[in-house]
Length: 423
Ligand code: EPZ
Image 1 (cartoon, helix red, strand yellow):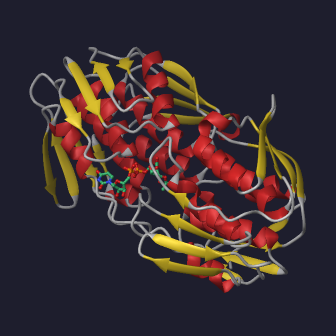
Image 2 (image 1 turned 90 degrees about the vertical axis):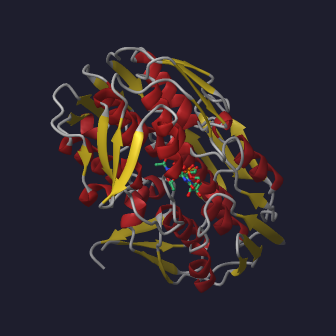
């Protein structure tokens, strides 16, 4: 398993490109299952999760061709051979559940392995199933698989109110509703930019959707969907991660293609911490205003609140901030696994349930640390960039799921960072 060696090396300066969003691409790819016509995605990120989704779609009989070094995905579900998503693929990536809605809507039947547990929480899929039941489907759990059956004549429009916001369940229900007979209303739906991106792509395919980006989605089902070409939205989590690099090390960095509208709540927190964020034609220019970052409190919320996927990275920044900050994690029940690793680097963190109290120290010290999940791994790299000496981040396969070319991108800003093969 690869590791990444980071040596604290002072301020970072320059431009950094931001890729297309992993969490948008992972829901846009299953949308190909809704139509016989080709769907082409541009600005696709080159990540191991995208390759896993490619394998899953190909296992169903879809054609998925990566062009232009993987930045373009040409897909077609003209000749699907199966409606069964096997455990061997699904266990590698929870987002595999997003084939359920499209298969059920187009073919009236689907068998999808249950994803199983995850490092950051139990992450059940009950809301996905309930939303499909609201469209008339019968759901049965058997042998570790969801067996889903639409009524004869296909799914029918219905109304469903999510008891709490779920990104994945909203995406699955939205895709299914595009081919349901009649009107579907989804209340308390997720409002993430990835949902808006999915809705835009589906509309290009001929879907009738209103309210994307609001809590109420209204979908008028159509008989069939066509093809489309769609550009994947910028990855706001990669964007936020790299905005923290100059915040934690000093210097001035422009994140190309970044927009404040993708990360308003996050930018407000950076402003309160003494970090300047300026929107330019090129993207977001980020720099420390003066001296030491100030401690700020953070609570994770669904969009437009502070994203849970930036909580670990924000904790890395707060480790050397002036004062004490409290980070409250409200989305996942076990998302502080990075805290003990940061404490190995000298951070002062007290975790009590869903709250982490961080007392800023002058400087962290490099140490060997272990990545436990995707966002935890990049928070350790950020901490290593500002630490004294060397930090060896182990198990970076987590990182490769959501960040392309980390070493090259940060290295171009002046970071001392290298991948160590097969530790
Ligand atoms: C998406 O996961 C993202 N993944 C996650 O990013 C992100 O953290 C999360 O949304 C929240 O923003 C992808 O888009 C592929 P949820 P998802 O359904 O859809 C509970 C990353 O780092 N819940 O909004 O799985 C659930 O357990 C990843 O890129 C149910 O109880 O998240 C969680 O506590 C990590 N039943 C909460 O809701 C359900 O049926 C929110 O989950 C569904 C969810």
